[in-house]
Length: 168
Image 1 (tube, rainbow, N blue to C red):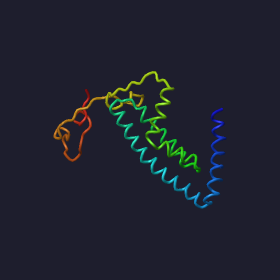
Image 2 (tube, rainbow, N blue to C red):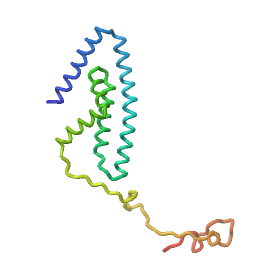
Image 3 (tube, rainbow, N blue to C red):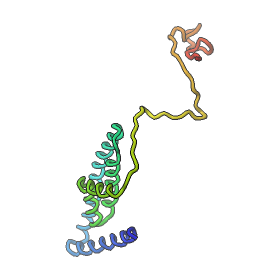
Image 4 (cartoon, one colour):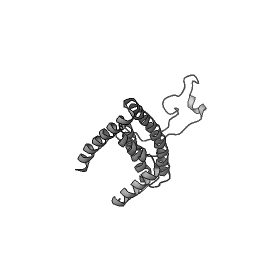
């Protein structure tokens, strides 16, 4: 029900604002404002998105809870969508979501209503794939270059027991 009201109310509010402001300043200034807010919003969204991505990467690298940077990033994405949508009401909402104090207040409000079971971060080094059907497990050792040449120094590594690869 709320989603239906949102899809009906927002366009009605935008149309009413366009009529009111258009009557006061005219068509061309409105179109210029719409284009400028979309351009300015895109620049601000990109800058804040990069900062939030860095915060997320740092949180993951340090094994901290990444939910705050993820929530901030989601709100910045919503702000970008709102700023690219033509209209004064959506621009006001989009610009307000680009303000960190507004995002923090929304996150606090929503986190009080959402319960998380747990979060566990582990750091065990680089991720390793489990061997699949195409994986051949083996060991190798590097031999001295003189041992690697065999009888003919021009021919490179030889096959067989004098090659650079040995079985273990």
